[in-house]
Image (tube, rainbow, N blue to C red; front, side, top):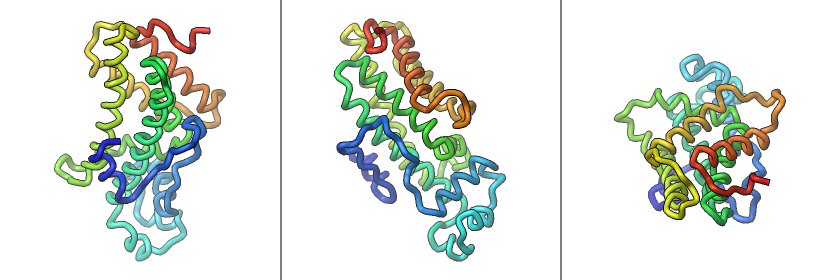
Length: 222
């Protein structure tokens, strides 16, 4: 993780992946108030959720809620940072485990989709980022971590191109946008009650990603 991303993420949330299997995911640990907020935002959207609703779900009074959080927008910012801190940490761990560009990309995409499917409510909060004003400085930590994640994948894809393991004619940034967009879209259709497990969806998207970059040999070929 870059120094900028560490500084951004270190204020409120940390994720220690040392010695852990990046494929085994639980919900990101959150304070009671934030856990209540992520559920409310998922069910009702940011605008459809009131601060009283969050306090009621969390079982706290409004004064208590305001003691810990500035306002509803501040709660959204904290959820965005918590989610992106987790994504950045686990994607980094997944990439480190890979030996080749194909393995690194496959692991990274699998890790991202596991975030989307294993903690669907928190992952869905990313769509509410649009409610932050472009001039709001609270956007910066989230953007710093998102950019760091994108750069890690861009480096993997470029390494695959340079080695001849990946073959495609499109711009690396365009391919990256396509892959990230596809992963983010998982939150619009995936439901825990569906036929496929988070692991099955993640493995499928990893295989698709390798096909997108024209991987010449993959661990999924057998």
